[in-house]
Length: 150
Image 1 (cartoon, rainbow, N blue to C red):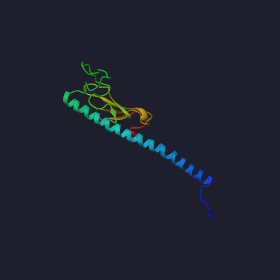
Image 2: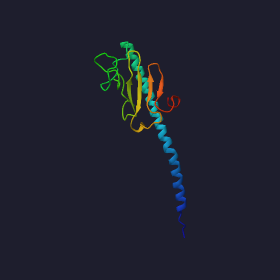
Image 3: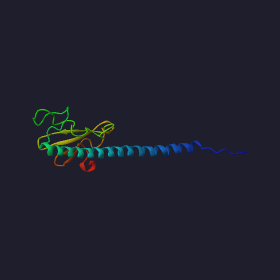
Image 4: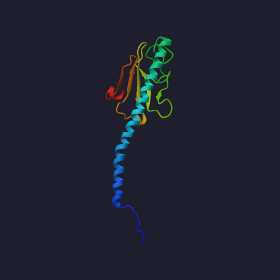
């Protein structure tokens, strides 16, 4: 007579419990890692937008008129907007596909600006919130600490 090999119910339940515990630990860590990589991409996009703003200043001797149609005219010169989604750089991070951050220009004068990267979609509940960068290179976040998020 041949003896059949099989798993007992207890062995199966122990295996399911172990897999459940591993998943409970691994999935949140993975999600946090994805958010961190999206945040790093947004930081790079902010630095790229800052470079575009500096090119704008080199060409026009002003940071004005770099905003898109959804912005406001804060410098006073007629014709184009100074704030809002940038017209000189992609308005989201990543530049194509689903946006994790929306890039905007705010607080523009002829000699100063502040750039914002606001989390959207799945990134909206990121612990760092909105990332900021000024014309002097000062980095900021709306929550958490700069050292933790930049």
